[in-house]
Length: 338
Image (cartoon, rainbow, N blue to C red; front, side):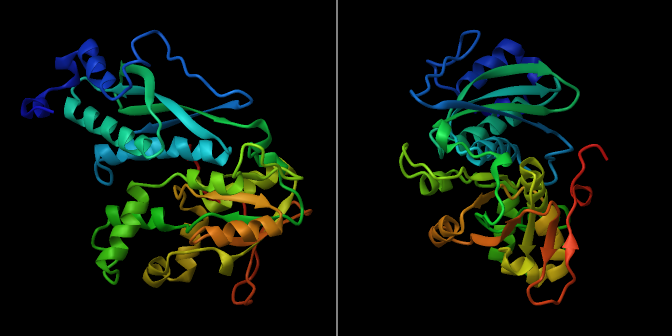
């Protein structure tokens, strides 16, 4: 990027000039036509997901650099693929930007996208650019998985264990520190940095898939159910239970929470952020207990947090009897249109 580019706007460069620059972030052999052509492997299902991020709603200059906004946008979509048991093969990017937005901001956004994607051998294969009063990033991600290894929400069974692949509440804590830098005075510099990084640079849990499905022919007597926890741990369990027609009991003492978070805000506030804070991008999986124990042994900071029940309600219980049982509901979580 040239020094003069920091003053150049989208309007000044024009649509074709902007497209030419953004194509440099894509493999030359896959872009330039009306559509990209992706080759999937035999005996695999194509898995497609889409996600939209809007300036002022999902990211802002107060908390997120352009590079971090790009990373988060890519990670959110890759997390959805991981939650389906799919390996990513490419994404498209729909970009809406004001004409006076700096070209440098757009290129930094794409740098963050490609930095995240490169970790998983995934590329940008196309997209679209339009003028918009609000900066908007709309991503469609493509993945593939053997049909017998797809993870769905509607296949949870009573007596299956509920496993989370990592800690929760860290992203919400990181956001709080970014919005209110004067808070968290008791945190060490490394703890503060870790919580902020959890918000700005989430890691999609594609690393879990080879542990669940070590070979293309890996099969289980019953399918694994699950989804990611991008809208909060409580939301994920509730969504799975609603789709499967079951309920759950979650032990609050089994949920992995960053020690720094509990020490900072206390157990009660930490639990709220764990359940409803969102954007932790971990996987919530329902599977037989023996398989669950094996998976937890292989993953740091993962845990079996509860069990699927035949009764339809989802309860947060306390094995130490310090807190009363609490029935979880969607109304307590994030609402997009409130």
